[in-house]
Image 1 (cartoon, rainbow, N blue to C red):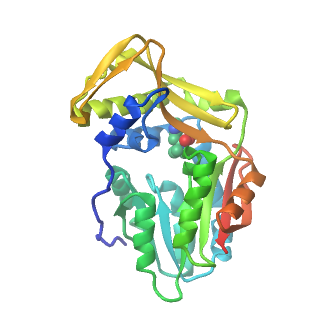
Image 2: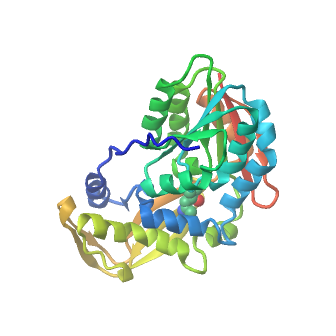
Amino acid sequence: MIVPAITPNATYDFADDVRAGLSQRGQKELPSKYLYDDVGSALFEVISHLPEYGLTRADERLLRRHADEIVNRVAGPVAIVELGSGSGKKTRSLLESFSRRQPTFYYPIEISRAALDMCERELRDIDAISIVGFEREYLDGLQEVAAYRKRGQHLLVLFLGSTIGNFDRAAGVKFLAEVRRILEPGDSLLLGTDLEKSSAQLLRAYDDELGVTAAFNLNLLARVNRELDADFDLRQFAHVARINRETRSVEMHLQSKRRQSVSIPAAEVVVEFLEGETIWTESSHKYSMEEIVETAGQAGFRCETQWIDEQWPFAENLLIAE
Ligand code: AVJ
Protein backbone atom coordinates (compact mmCIF):
# COMPACT_ATOMS: atom_id res chain seq x y z
CA MET A 1 0.00 0.00 0.00
CA ILE A 2 1.16 3.53 -0.63
CA VAL A 3 -0.08 6.62 1.16
CA PRO A 4 0.56 9.56 -1.16
CA ALA A 5 1.50 12.14 1.50
CA ILE A 6 4.86 12.86 0.00
CA THR A 7 6.38 16.18 0.92
CA PRO A 8 8.64 18.09 -1.45
CA ASN A 9 11.57 20.42 -1.01
CA ALA A 10 14.99 20.01 0.54
CA THR A 11 16.70 23.00 2.07
CA TYR A 12 20.19 23.23 0.64
CA ASP A 13 21.71 25.59 -1.81
CA PHE A 14 23.62 23.92 -4.59
CA ALA A 15 25.01 27.20 -5.94
CA ASP A 16 26.37 28.29 -2.53
CA ASP A 17 27.98 24.91 -1.88
CA VAL A 18 29.56 24.80 -5.35
CA ARG A 19 30.95 28.32 -4.98
CA ALA A 20 32.33 27.60 -1.51
CA GLY A 21 33.86 24.24 -2.44
CA LEU A 22 35.53 25.40 -5.66
CA SER A 23 36.81 28.76 -4.48
CA GLN A 24 38.46 27.61 -1.26
CA ARG A 25 42.27 27.59 -1.02
CA GLY A 26 44.06 24.26 -1.22
CA GLN A 27 42.05 21.15 -2.05
CA LYS A 28 38.91 22.00 -4.02
CA GLU A 29 35.87 19.92 -3.12
CA LEU A 30 32.22 19.27 -3.92
CA PRO A 31 29.91 17.57 -1.37
CA SER A 32 29.20 13.96 -2.31
CA LYS A 33 25.47 14.31 -1.69
CA TYR A 34 25.23 16.20 -4.99
CA LEU A 35 26.28 13.08 -6.91
CA TYR A 36 22.66 11.90 -6.66
CA ASP A 37 20.51 13.82 -9.10
CA ASP A 38 18.32 11.75 -11.48
CA VAL A 39 21.26 10.76 -13.68
CA GLY A 40 23.58 10.10 -10.73
CA SER A 41 21.00 7.97 -8.91
CA ALA A 42 20.50 5.88 -12.07
CA LEU A 43 24.28 5.49 -12.50
CA PHE A 44 24.71 4.40 -8.89
CA GLU A 45 22.00 1.81 -9.47
CA VAL A 46 24.14 0.44 -12.34
CA ILE A 47 27.29 0.51 -10.16
CA SER A 48 25.51 -1.72 -7.65
CA HIS A 49 25.24 -4.41 -10.37
CA LEU A 50 28.93 -4.32 -11.37
CA PRO A 51 30.95 -7.44 -10.51
CA GLU A 52 33.75 -5.25 -9.05
CA TYR A 53 31.40 -3.44 -6.65
CA GLY A 54 30.14 -6.07 -4.23
CA LEU A 55 29.00 -3.68 -1.50
CA THR A 56 25.30 -3.36 -2.32
CA ARG A 57 24.85 -7.07 -3.02
CA ALA A 58 26.53 -7.94 0.30
CA ASP A 59 24.15 -5.56 2.07
CA GLU A 60 21.17 -7.17 0.31
CA ARG A 61 22.32 -10.73 1.03
CA LEU A 62 22.69 -9.98 4.73
CA LEU A 63 19.27 -8.36 4.94
CA ARG A 64 17.68 -11.28 3.10
CA ARG A 65 19.42 -13.95 5.16
CA HIS A 66 18.82 -12.36 8.55
CA ALA A 67 15.53 -10.51 8.06
CA ASP A 68 13.51 -12.71 10.44
CA GLU A 69 16.21 -12.57 13.08
CA ILE A 70 16.38 -8.78 12.83
CA VAL A 71 12.60 -8.53 13.25
CA ASN A 72 12.80 -10.78 16.32
CA ARG A 73 15.42 -8.56 17.92
CA VAL A 74 13.51 -5.32 17.38
CA ALA A 75 10.74 -4.60 19.89
CA GLY A 76 7.36 -3.84 18.28
CA PRO A 77 5.15 -2.12 17.32
CA VAL A 78 7.64 -0.27 15.22
CA ALA A 79 7.73 2.44 12.56
CA ILE A 80 10.61 2.09 10.10
CA VAL A 81 12.52 5.14 8.89
CA GLU A 82 15.14 4.69 6.19
CA LEU A 83 17.80 7.37 5.71
CA GLY A 84 18.63 7.32 2.00
CA SER A 85 16.39 4.55 0.68
CA GLY A 86 17.85 4.57 -2.84
CA SER A 87 15.88 2.23 -5.11
CA GLY A 88 14.40 0.46 -2.07
CA LYS A 89 15.36 -2.95 -3.43
CA LYS A 90 17.61 -4.00 -0.57
CA THR A 91 14.92 -3.16 2.01
CA ARG A 92 12.25 -5.45 0.55
CA SER A 93 13.01 -8.66 2.47
CA LEU A 94 13.15 -6.79 5.75
CA LEU A 95 9.80 -5.06 5.11
CA GLU A 96 8.25 -8.40 4.13
CA SER A 97 9.40 -9.92 7.42
CA PHE A 98 8.01 -6.99 9.42
CA SER A 99 4.72 -7.16 7.49
CA ARG A 100 4.30 -10.79 8.60
CA ARG A 101 4.45 -9.63 12.22
CA GLN A 102 2.06 -6.67 11.94
CA PRO A 103 1.02 -3.79 9.65
CA THR A 104 3.90 -1.33 9.59
CA PHE A 105 4.59 2.19 8.37
CA TYR A 106 7.74 2.70 6.30
CA TYR A 107 9.13 6.22 5.86
CA PRO A 108 11.90 6.50 3.24
CA ILE A 109 13.83 9.79 3.48
CA GLU A 110 15.67 10.91 0.37
CA ILE A 111 17.03 14.10 -1.14
CA SER A 112 16.55 12.51 -4.55
CA ARG A 113 12.99 12.66 -5.88
CA ALA A 114 13.93 10.08 -8.54
CA ALA A 115 15.16 7.61 -5.92
CA LEU A 116 12.04 8.16 -3.84
CA ASP A 117 9.81 7.43 -6.85
CA MET A 118 11.83 4.30 -7.67
CA CYS A 119 11.58 3.15 -4.07
CA GLU A 120 7.81 3.62 -3.95
CA ARG A 121 7.31 1.70 -7.19
CA GLU A 122 9.60 -1.08 -6.01
CA LEU A 123 7.87 -1.65 -2.65
CA ARG A 124 4.23 -0.64 -3.09
CA ASP A 125 3.01 -4.23 -3.56
CA ILE A 126 3.91 -5.34 -0.01
CA ASP A 127 0.50 -5.60 1.60
CA ALA A 128 0.75 -4.63 5.23
CA ILE A 129 3.39 -1.95 4.64
CA SER A 130 2.29 1.69 4.25
CA ILE A 131 4.86 3.87 2.52
CA VAL A 132 5.16 7.60 3.19
CA GLY A 133 8.16 9.14 1.47
CA PHE A 134 9.86 12.36 2.54
CA GLU A 135 11.98 14.45 0.20
CA ARG A 136 14.26 15.76 2.94
CA GLU A 137 17.75 15.84 4.36
CA TYR A 138 18.22 12.84 6.69
CA LEU A 139 17.96 14.47 10.10
CA ASP A 140 15.13 16.83 9.09
CA GLY A 141 13.13 13.87 7.81
CA LEU A 142 13.86 11.73 10.87
CA GLN A 143 12.80 14.57 13.16
CA GLU A 144 9.50 14.91 11.32
CA VAL A 145 8.74 11.21 11.54
CA ALA A 146 9.70 11.14 15.23
CA ALA A 147 7.24 13.98 15.87
CA TYR A 148 4.38 11.78 14.57
CA ARG A 149 5.36 8.85 16.76
CA LYS A 150 2.46 7.19 18.55
CA ARG A 151 2.52 6.31 22.23
CA GLY A 152 4.20 2.96 22.82
CA GLN A 153 5.60 2.82 19.30
CA HIS A 154 9.31 2.24 18.72
CA LEU A 155 11.34 3.57 15.84
CA LEU A 156 13.71 1.47 13.76
CA VAL A 157 16.08 3.62 11.73
CA LEU A 158 17.76 2.01 8.70
CA PHE A 159 21.04 3.54 7.59
CA LEU A 160 22.21 0.98 5.07
CA GLY A 161 24.61 0.68 2.16
CA SER A 162 27.55 2.10 4.12
CA THR A 163 26.37 5.64 3.49
CA ILE A 164 27.98 6.42 6.86
CA GLY A 165 31.30 5.84 5.08
CA ASN A 166 30.87 9.15 3.27
CA PHE A 167 31.41 10.96 6.59
CA ASP A 168 34.88 11.16 8.08
CA ARG A 169 35.08 9.18 11.32
CA ALA A 170 34.49 12.10 13.67
CA ALA A 171 31.55 13.34 11.61
CA GLY A 172 30.19 9.77 11.57
CA VAL A 173 30.09 9.67 15.39
CA LYS A 174 28.53 13.11 15.47
CA PHE A 175 25.86 12.09 12.96
CA LEU A 176 24.98 8.92 14.90
CA ALA A 177 24.80 10.98 18.11
CA GLU A 178 22.34 13.33 16.41
CA VAL A 179 20.24 10.36 15.31
CA ARG A 180 20.40 9.07 18.90
CA ARG A 181 19.20 12.42 20.26
CA ILE A 182 16.03 12.16 18.16
CA LEU A 183 15.39 8.57 19.33
CA GLU A 184 14.12 7.20 22.65
CA PRO A 185 15.83 4.49 24.72
CA GLY A 186 14.96 1.09 23.26
CA ASP A 187 14.64 2.38 19.68
CA SER A 188 17.01 0.79 17.19
CA LEU A 189 19.34 1.64 14.37
CA LEU A 190 20.34 -0.89 11.74
CA LEU A 191 23.65 0.33 10.35
CA GLY A 192 25.30 -1.14 7.24
CA THR A 193 29.07 -0.67 7.09
CA ASP A 194 31.60 -1.67 4.48
CA LEU A 195 34.61 -3.36 6.11
CA GLU A 196 38.30 -2.95 5.40
CA LYS A 197 39.61 -4.88 2.39
CA SER A 198 42.65 -4.86 0.12
CA SER A 199 43.64 -1.72 -1.78
CA ALA A 200 43.52 -3.65 -5.05
CA GLN A 201 39.94 -4.74 -4.42
CA LEU A 202 38.92 -1.22 -3.43
CA LEU A 203 40.51 0.39 -6.48
CA ARG A 204 38.74 -2.06 -8.77
CA ALA A 205 35.44 -1.29 -7.02
CA TYR A 206 35.80 2.49 -7.33
CA ASP A 207 37.38 2.56 -10.80
CA ASP A 208 35.55 -0.16 -12.71
CA GLU A 209 36.65 -1.13 -16.20
CA LEU A 210 33.36 -0.19 -17.87
CA GLY A 211 33.78 3.35 -16.63
CA VAL A 212 30.42 3.56 -14.86
CA THR A 213 31.96 4.98 -11.68
CA ALA A 214 33.86 7.48 -13.82
CA ALA A 215 30.56 8.55 -15.40
CA PHE A 216 28.94 8.73 -11.95
CA ASN A 217 31.72 11.04 -10.76
CA LEU A 218 31.88 13.18 -13.93
CA ASN A 219 28.11 13.61 -13.82
CA LEU A 220 28.68 15.98 -10.92
CA LEU A 221 30.33 18.43 -13.35
CA ALA A 222 27.58 17.77 -15.91
CA ARG A 223 25.08 18.63 -13.18
CA VAL A 224 26.86 21.90 -12.45
CA ASN A 225 26.63 22.63 -16.20
CA ARG A 226 22.92 21.76 -16.32
CA GLU A 227 21.78 23.49 -13.17
CA LEU A 228 24.21 26.39 -12.82
CA ASP A 229 24.84 27.09 -16.47
CA ALA A 230 28.57 26.34 -16.15
CA ASP A 231 30.93 25.48 -19.01
CA PHE A 232 32.90 22.49 -17.67
CA ASP A 233 34.41 20.54 -20.58
CA LEU A 234 33.95 17.01 -19.23
CA ARG A 235 36.60 15.64 -21.58
CA GLN A 236 39.18 17.79 -19.83
CA PHE A 237 38.63 16.06 -16.47
CA ALA A 238 39.47 12.50 -15.46
CA HIS A 239 37.98 10.27 -12.78
CA VAL A 240 40.57 9.20 -10.19
CA ALA A 241 40.12 6.73 -7.32
CA ARG A 242 42.75 6.89 -4.55
CA ILE A 243 43.40 5.01 -1.34
CA ASN A 244 43.99 7.23 1.67
CA ARG A 245 45.81 5.01 4.17
CA GLU A 246 45.70 7.50 7.00
CA THR A 247 41.92 7.83 6.96
CA ARG A 248 41.36 4.24 5.75
CA SER A 249 39.14 5.45 2.95
CA VAL A 250 38.83 5.41 -0.83
CA GLU A 251 38.58 8.87 -2.34
CA MET A 252 37.11 9.91 -5.65
CA HIS A 253 38.55 12.95 -7.37
CA LEU A 254 38.06 14.73 -10.70
CA GLN A 255 41.44 15.66 -12.09
CA SER A 256 41.96 18.56 -14.48
CA LYS A 257 43.90 17.34 -17.52
CA ARG A 258 45.26 20.79 -18.22
CA ARG A 259 45.36 24.34 -16.99
CA GLN A 260 41.88 25.77 -17.57
CA SER A 261 39.29 28.14 -16.27
CA VAL A 262 35.59 27.36 -15.88
CA SER A 263 32.83 29.87 -15.38
CA ILE A 264 29.78 29.08 -13.29
CA PRO A 265 27.38 31.99 -13.84
CA ALA A 266 24.59 30.91 -11.49
CA ALA A 267 27.15 30.57 -8.68
CA GLU A 268 28.74 33.88 -9.67
CA VAL A 269 32.24 32.45 -9.84
CA VAL A 270 35.03 31.68 -12.29
CA VAL A 271 37.29 28.82 -11.18
CA GLU A 272 40.92 28.36 -12.24
CA PHE A 273 42.42 24.86 -12.44
CA LEU A 274 46.09 23.94 -12.67
CA GLU A 275 47.11 20.93 -14.74
CA GLY A 276 46.73 17.86 -12.50
CA GLU A 277 44.73 19.69 -9.83
CA THR A 278 41.76 17.76 -8.44
CA ILE A 279 38.29 18.30 -7.04
CA TRP A 280 37.67 15.89 -4.17
CA THR A 281 34.11 14.58 -4.59
CA GLU A 282 33.72 11.65 -2.17
CA SER A 283 35.38 9.58 0.54
CA SER A 284 34.21 6.09 1.45
CA HIS A 285 35.59 5.12 4.83
CA LYS A 286 36.05 1.44 5.62
CA TYR A 287 35.45 0.07 9.10
CA SER A 288 36.62 -2.72 11.38
CA MET A 289 34.10 -4.69 13.46
CA GLU A 290 35.47 -3.55 16.83
CA GLU A 291 35.52 0.04 15.69
CA ILE A 292 31.79 -0.05 14.90
CA VAL A 293 31.02 -1.23 18.45
CA GLU A 294 33.15 1.58 19.82
CA THR A 295 31.68 4.22 17.48
CA ALA A 296 28.16 3.11 18.42
CA GLY A 297 29.05 3.42 22.12
CA GLN A 298 30.37 6.95 21.67
CA ALA A 299 27.08 7.92 20.03
CA GLY A 300 24.88 6.45 22.79
CA PHE A 301 24.06 3.07 21.27
CA ARG A 302 24.77 -0.48 22.41
CA CYS A 303 25.77 -2.85 19.63
CA GLU A 304 23.36 -5.77 19.93
CA THR A 305 24.41 -7.96 16.96
CA GLN A 306 26.75 -7.85 13.96
CA TRP A 307 26.14 -9.96 10.87
CA ILE A 308 28.98 -10.41 8.36
CA ASP A 309 28.87 -11.37 4.70
CA GLU A 310 31.34 -14.10 3.68
CA GLN A 311 31.74 -13.07 0.05
CA TRP A 312 32.38 -9.35 0.48
CA PRO A 313 33.54 -7.98 3.85
CA PHE A 314 30.51 -6.00 5.00
CA ALA A 315 28.67 -5.80 8.34
CA GLU A 316 25.05 -5.22 9.27
CA ASN A 317 25.05 -3.84 12.84
CA LEU A 318 21.95 -3.71 15.03
CA LEU A 319 22.39 -0.85 17.53
CA ILE A 320 20.02 -0.18 20.41
CA ALA A 321 19.57 3.34 21.81
CA GLU A 322 20.56 3.43 25.49
C1 AVJ B 1 26.38 4.63 -1.85
C2 AVJ B 1 27.86 5.96 -0.59
C3 AVJ B 1 27.85 3.62 -0.28
O1 AVJ B 1 30.64 5.12 -1.06
O2 AVJ B 1 30.63 3.14 -1.93
C4 AVJ B 1 29.87 4.02 -5.27
C5 AVJ B 1 28.80 5.49 -3.41
N1 AVJ B 1 30.79 5.90 -4.86
N2 AVJ B 1 30.93 4.13 -6.07
C6 AVJ B 1 30.12 4.24 -1.73
C7 AVJ B 1 29.79 5.13 -4.49
C8 AVJ B 1 31.48 5.28 -5.83
C9 AVJ B 1 28.74 4.47 -2.34
N3 AVJ B 1 27.72 4.70 -1.28
